[in-house]
Length: 177
Image (tube, rainbow, N blue to C red; front, top):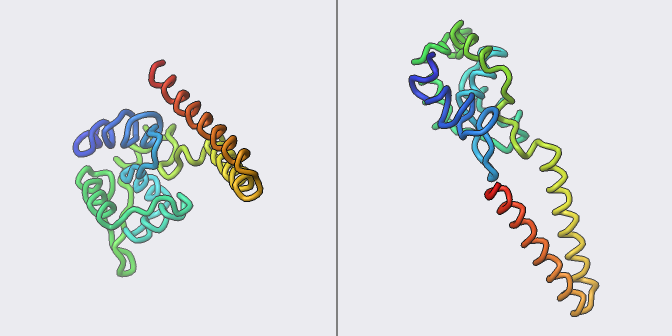
């Protein structure tokens, strides 16, 4: 279809609607990643026509401020989507807006089972729990530093070193299996 013309299969480098491989829009990397700009733009334009600035604002708002695409990523992507026939530029009340075409709606409908690209691993319950546990661990470690004896601080450092080693073992097990 249209998406294979510029972005690969069907957007980006990986399978599905994502730009990084893995499931959903943009995939399963462990580190913080940028979202799939084409998918985000198409989803937002399916709601209503918008200009580039409105699209950037909406992505930032929907991602809770974690993803702030630049004009250098938005406008070239809009041009590519327009070249593909998925969107078109229109003028309304003196403002240049972009809107989905019928081909764009069809493409979105074929990929509706994917999560929006502004959602990612940081939105999962497991990630939130891990982050909470890490913060609590830091608080406990700082309490030991401030209130503990030297022997207690040394013991706490060993506990943290063992926890770090165990965390890396979890990653190693995933890579082996």
